[in-house]
Length: 288
Image (tube, rainbow, N blue to C red; front, side, top):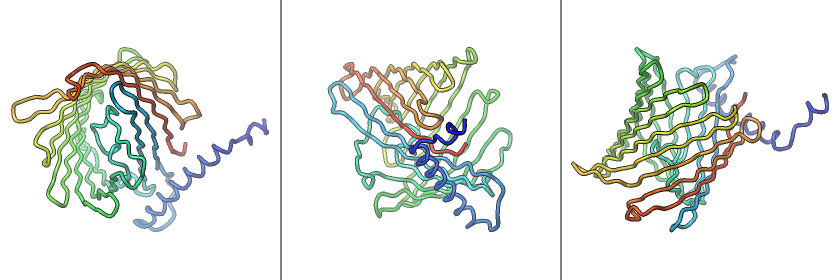
């Protein structure tokens, strides 16, 4: 028994060390705002995901996503610090196109400090200030997120408004509804609407999916989605998609993989059918 307790792999040690670095960073930021020792544990977490995709008629694609959320233990109900790349910040990201950015310096990043307000009549309000950057190009912005909880928490409406220092702004609305058939099967409706002042059209994505929870570490999803753009009074279909997604935590609670075959009918291909396969592997950094 004692031998098993001390039989921690080198990978586990590296993982625990990285988690501790995140927590120490969170505590350092927290101490900047409030002096003194705190007894609250940190809920700081991060996710790193690497994706590979192949699609008929296209070259293979690659992407890496990173998101770090530093919760501040002494005032964690009020403030948290977010660092993420452009894909992780993009609510519309669905993996149908990967950026093929192999160099970290070529990606755009967001750093934001969010202030969470108390819930009032099922409404959550979060304000934030941040900066979007790529290399030495900096774009400060103001962020306002509103969350409306509906239908006994089974339906949620979100609105994110953001304005940049150069006057550009964007507004994203998403409406989600979750319906359970049983304890292990549920239906998920998602609807997204986004307007950006520097683009002369509104982006819309609608999807519906069914998920079966196979075990506490495995789940299988099948779904359909439709992406379109609205320009004045004309709607353009960008693509239709039929997809299958399988996700499994295969090492403890933090290392997982996903694979997702799909069929797409893209506007760029004159709506001819194409076949796509995407594989993701990711790590969740979090102290349990």
